[in-house]
Image (cartoon, rainbow, N blue to C red; front, side):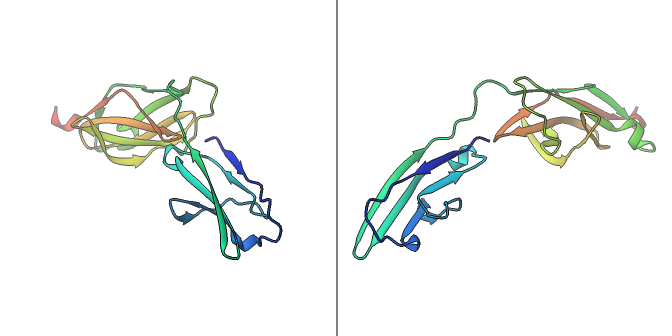
Length: 175
C-alpha cells in the first residue's frame, strides 16, 4: 500500500505536545511525528479511508482541522492468477504426489508477488470457503487437498482479491 503524510501548522505559541492530538472517528491514531504536527499513514488499505482530525488545545480554547482520506484500489488488475491443472485425480495413499494443487500468480504491472498472500479454498456456492494458507515454492502456490471438490487460489493484494480458475479434485478410489 501507498502512504500519505498529513501536516498542520499551529500558529499559537505555547501549545504543549500533549495538547496536540490526531484522531480518526474519535479514536487516537498512531503515526504522529515527535512534535505532533504531522501524521504519517503507511500501507493504506480501503478500510483506512475516513476523516482524520488534528486538535490543538490551549487553556479553554481548542481548534480542530479535518482531513478527508479516500483510499482507492486500482481498477486495473495487478495480477493474473491461474491453476496449473484444472483437474486432479487424487490417490489418498500418495497424497503428496497426487493431491497437490499448483497455482501460478503473474504480476501484470511490475509488482512483486508476495509468497504470504495466497490461500487455497474450496469453491462452494460461488464463494471461497474452508481456506488454508498456500505454500509458495519455486514461484508456484501449492497445497495438498485430498477431499474431492472444486478448489481455487485466492491471492490478496492491497485489499483486492484475485481468484484463480477452478481445479476439480476427484478421488482415484471412487473410480
